[in-house]
Image 1 (cartoon, rainbow, N blue to C red):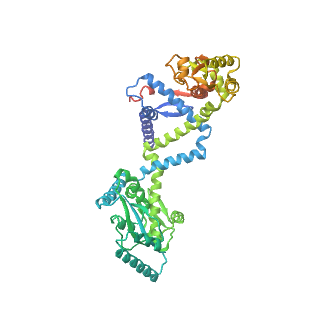
Image 2 (image 1 turned 180 degrees about the horizontal axis):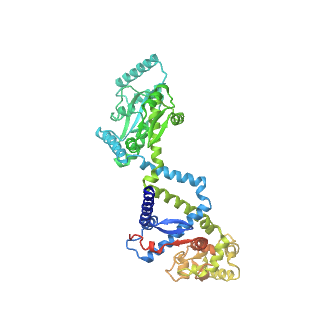
Image 3 (image 1 turned 135 degrees about the horizontal axis):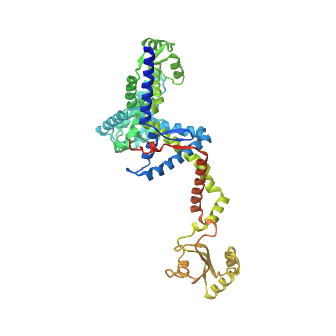
Length: 520
């Protein structure tokens, strides 16, 4: 009996808790059966620049826009646009770029970059140096005897350079004769091995270094030119990228991993790790993360694709496992991250489905464009009349009169050929002509003779100007107003498409909940 009472009370409290949660974030609407919570609608409503204190009319207008938005997304999903390989790749690429700021301690990363920059600046170093070097490549398996011989030879070359210091061409001659690399090159920070940078950034212009070793070989370097170090904000990203490339990971990420270890109760298994380091493999557990055990089997799969020493493989495996786990939980831990990813997905789907249903058709459906133009011809009347005709520049007034009289007898499309064949067939042309559709301001002679504008200066050798044609308030053909026509036709297509989606869909709005938007 007591157990029954407890169970009943638990169910009552559970039901009460769910009811309270529902009251805190109630369902505002259902679109084709899919629930939209008030908080989800509010995020969209507030994000899109709705002014503070907007009235019911503004809210109702946005509700309609939001419903259209959701219906378009559903149409894209029904069409399978969210399953295409290109869509998935774009979504993955966006998420991959976005997670960078969530998987590192950005303050620590910037702090480390700042420290490195300050070190460069405090040392009086240049931002870049232009160098030339006498360089001999040394293979990893070089014998000790050969190495000593090479070191002795480079010391001898350096001695000769010191003796011939007054002869600036002597260094270039040694480069041509002895160096495995002949060309000068620019060096920026974190581009070359640390051993190389430590030497060259400490030299003055014209100074020559003693022979020194790097992992690539042995060098004698001369600094030809220096450029000042650029401001930190310009160099920050490059320093961070370079440090990551050099050290495998930036300090901000390493600090962040240590925080995650504590958060997810990372616990190493000493016995498994000792066996792995001793034998190179193990079937034991290596560590536990948030209650899940990771062992030798998972490590082996990772190590097969990450050639390195076992200890370094284990460190990289641990870091990757922790970051992968955090990555899988980003949407749960960070609502703003989830909304950004969702927003990118929605925007892509809207663009794709709109382009398919409206965009392509509005530009390529010539029959539809023509029909729409004929039905809405008055919408495309010009603000000012245009002149459709031909501008004639003639040698005499008599020629001008003859041309105009002749052109009245033939179709407009034959005018230019008629001028060319009838009046300009001889050695001396009598007429210059320009035919087209002219708006006020397009042609000074049309402005003068048709629109009664400023008097135009006659054309040299063709001083008598005349026009033949007609004024008109609107275009004769849809091609003449293609740009505004395409925009209007697109709006027409979208209106009909949305009406179709609305007719096929089912939308339910809780008006009482709607009253509480941004007011609860």
